[in-house]
Image 1 (cartoon, rainbow, N blue to C red):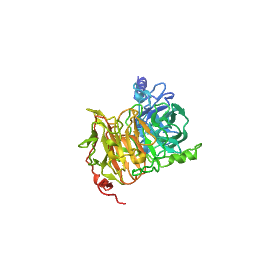
Image 2 (image 1 turned 180 degrees about the vertical axis):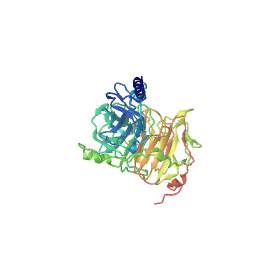
Image 3 (image 1 turned 120 degrees about the horizontal axis):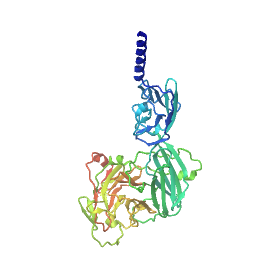
Image 4 (image 1 turned 30 degrees about the vertical axis):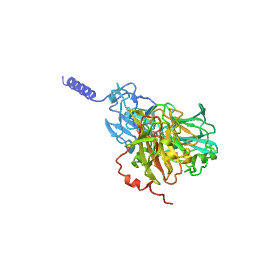
Length: 507
């Protein structure tokens, strides 16, 4: 009786012990799903699981990068997450994840890795290593991190009857593709240059030479995603400006047009601080003459958030213009007829005050509202003319000291600069509020769509003398133009760089 009872108790004890322990699998087989792609800033799961399904709670699970087996980014052992990560960049960003919505986690053999707030530096090969006392297996998951960069920035330089059109875009990962289109024909990019910033994001830069009037477009994008495109319409190369006595004409030292065309689909474009990357990367096969032409006098547009810190409240000059109706900072044309006919000219133009002889200054102009609609005829910019503009008898062009952005009289879907030749800036949405930024010392004049915080375009000129804000509400447009006023903290410091047009200029 005693011996059988002892045997029975032993069997019961062993059964109870086995039922309370996690079973150890007889073999291990790791399965993974690769590659995995994710956009920067998102959370991603790197799928890894045991086949067939079995409990992994009693196993060792090690995730590590490349050949860094002894430096895991996550280590699970003896039912404990011993190492979340020794790498500072992974601390607080790694945990077990689920390979799909029906997964039961570790109990069903799902040992997937969840990685939070992914950056481009996280891209690489991740190894999933699972082991027991008798067996082990591992698999590798390749993680690709994508970043969509900025809309291309186009710049144009005229030299010897040739137009050098440059295209650059930053903030991409992995390496983007750049395509040129000229007269609806694809072109091979010239001088294609890539560079990488400190965060691992890539920039791309290229240029083409154009000799005849046409529309040029540059698109940049990843192979499996939609590209971002910028377009510019170029007219004939400029001719030497005519010299007229008594005019305020100034010779251009250099002219560079920088612009961002609106995308086919509207997006909210935020500009970052950027640095030129000319001279970096592989330039094999490029023409030294083209490189010199491209790099000359290129000035990068200022970020809108920086421009706003230089806000000044511009007032309209107190002058009697019989062709304008002005009230409370709002202006529009008087009903005609006009001596110059239906074409918009200096008859309806007026200067702002005070003028500027140095420093950085920013102001905003409203171009209509929902009640009356948006303006279709307008000019906004700066001038160094000292006479009443409606009395000017010279063309109001850049070569004569009038630098401005305007609606296009020829194309309803474009804006244009007062340049020679005429350069059109296509758009898909007419701006309601335009911001104007003047950096007198660097020669930058930039224009912004304030509502979507995008750069419309930027030009570079050598300013001389006192430069005044400049406005023209156009002809036959019911929507008024309004010079917007703000409470400006730094107004006093900006006005120290201003000049009163009523005072004679010191020679």
